[in-house]
Length: 119
Image (cartoon, rainbow, N blue to C red; front, top):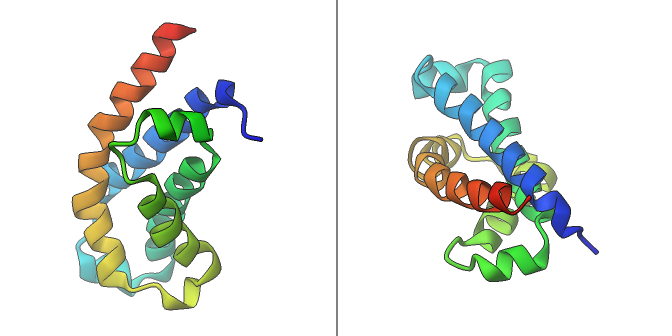
């Protein structure tokens, strides 16, 4: 069973990964990022961290905050990155970094602050 007290830490991990992604996506174009495997898999790893942290959120937290598509983050992205790494589509990953990650940030920040106030 996942511990609800760890939800705050999981949200913090998500925010840290988002910060790394948003800071670094401005340093590289799609072509630059995908032509350097170390850079590309750095992006992959941080999206993977977000997926793993989402996976580790308690079921209660996810149910209480059902406006986020947690299953999409966990199953559609995390599982592919972790278990199907050979199926990674660079365009899809980059679209996630460019579009989905920035829109996720304010939501996670809000949830983080809510839990922080409860401490």
